[in-house]
Figure 1: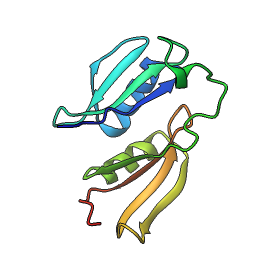
Figure 2 (figure 1 turned 45 degrees about the vertical axis):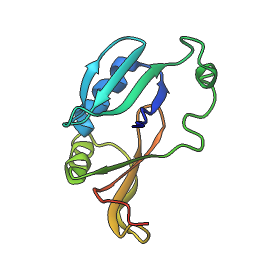
Figure 3 (figure 1 turned 90 degrees about the horizontal axis):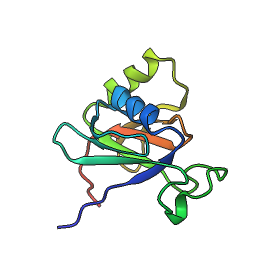
Length: 129
């Protein structure tokens, strides 16, 4: 078995963990100042948050670099409308409004998290190739 635990560097782990929990409904199962683990309703790890310039990780040493250059956090979720609603509640900037993705044939929209990472949220679907 192989699982992927995506980890991103953030300026304030506690603030980012709370933001992801409020927007996506993720559970914070390991909470700390330097590292946090977020899970979905099925208790599967969805995202790890790590403080910049801690623990010597080579890609997390220089926070002056543009966050997420080349990275897209792509969330497939049955709660996509709730995520959109949660963002509207806090008047969060939406980068791309809801539209049909011609490749997946699913509705999606995009925004940035507090650290500038680009996020696309789409209707849950199984990849069909």
